[in-house]
Structures are given as C-alpha cells and as structure tokens.
Image (tube, rainbow, N blue to C red; front, side, top):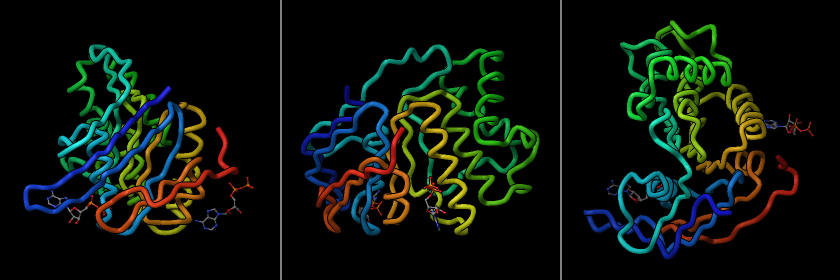
Length: 224
Ligand code: ADP
Ligand code: ADP
C-alpha cells in the first residue's frame, strides 16, 4: 500500500512565491526515497506538506494513518536540518518532548526513550546536555526524538548537511541500518547526489523552479 500520496500539489506562499508543483508523488509503505534538487526547488516545502505543517494551495496530500495516538505513537517523525535541541534540557528530556504531545504514560515514555537512545547509539549520553555533544551526536539526538514515537513515516530535511564527511557517512550507514531494522517509510531531502543514490531505493529529482518532478530513477543496489 501507499504511505504517502500527493496529487497535483501546489504551494504558493503568502508572499506570492510558488515554491512547489504541480507535484505528483507516491511513496510505498516501507520505501526509502530521496527528494533531490538544488536549494530553493521546494524540497522542504514538499516535506512540510507531507508532515501536515501547512496546507497545500491546491491538490491533495494523503498520508496513511494506522496509529492510535493514545499510546505514545505518532504517524510521522521529522528531522530538521538543524538539530533544534532545547539547550537547557538533557538528551533524555529532549527526546521526551514528542511523547508529551502523544499522550504517553510515564512508564511508556521512559521505555520508549531508552529504546530510541539505544537505536541511535546514545544510551550512555542520556544525562548529557546538548552543549556537551558533537554535531553528529546532536543529530543522533534529533533522530532519536523523531523515532521515539515509533512513527510509520520518517521525514528528514537535509539532516546531515552541516556535518563533516566522515560523520555524515557514519550517519548515512546508521540510518540505512535503522531503516532495514525498523521498516519505516523514509523520505529524505538532500541536494547531495551521492547521498540520494547511496541511501535510497528511488530518487525523485525535482526541477529548480517551481519544484516539479523532473525525473526519477530506481537504485538497484539499495535493498531492505
Ligand atoms: P528547498 O528545500 O528545496 O531549498 P524550500 O521548499 O525551502 O526549497 O523553498 C522553495 C521556495 O519557496 C524558495 O524560493 C523559498 O524562498 C520559498 N519559501 C520557502 N518557505 C517560504 C515561506 N515560509 N514563505 C515564503 N517563501 C518561502
Ligand atoms: P558494500 O556493501 O559493497 O561494501 P558499502 O555500504 O560499504 O558497500 O558502501 C559502498 C562503497 O561506497 C564503500 O566502499 C564505501 O566506503 C563508499 N562510500 C559510501 N559513502 C561514502 C562517502 N560519503 N565518502 C566516500 N566513500 C563512500
């Protein structure tokens, strides 16, 4: 089945800028796709629309929901380019944030947090503060915060763009391992051709302005 379905989606911002579309996009459940294109082509706009952050100006955005929100789950996890961590809160408390919105009990929340931190390799840093962490580790916290509600769909907006090459490559591999283990649908926004081809099963190439589908291709090497 489909996890995400966009039909003739257009986004025009209040200032009159048409940032996207018309864009048609289907993402299968469990698929790992990349949205690839130059800065300003509307990748983030597409991702935000999939996340339900803002409405399209025209067209339809459908996202599959099989989730009961009362058990600490949420259908979508979002990772921003900047880790956007609360500096006054520990790693554990940063990761807890989405659980407060997802109505998890304290016991449920604690077990989800420990699990998410283990998934990103940060169990030993639960009590650390963001300022004590490297860029790559902050991004891992951000990833844990997105995973903690056990979403069906993981949306990542150029998450590794600010990291050095080696850290970025490690995180690429860890993200692939997580995808293979957790069977999430992943939509990964990047302007790196390498990253899109290395990570995804399918690369959606967007035109510069306004963002439409220019072409797409399947990557035979990336398998679950
Ligand atoms: P990308 O992620 O590919 O860099 P964006 O989706 O961020 O592209 O932006 C696409 C276009 O929409 C750009 O021209 C950008 O300046 C514009 N844009 C993005 N967000 C807003 C906004 N909130 N208000 C007005 N224009 C915006
Ligand atoms: P395989 O399963 O065939 O060993 P890998 O997962 O190790 O494939 O990756 C394929 C190749 O691409 C490896 O040699 C890896 O080192 C290289 N590679 C992947 N990402 C990068 C990168 N960012 N910079 C340099 N080399 C990379």
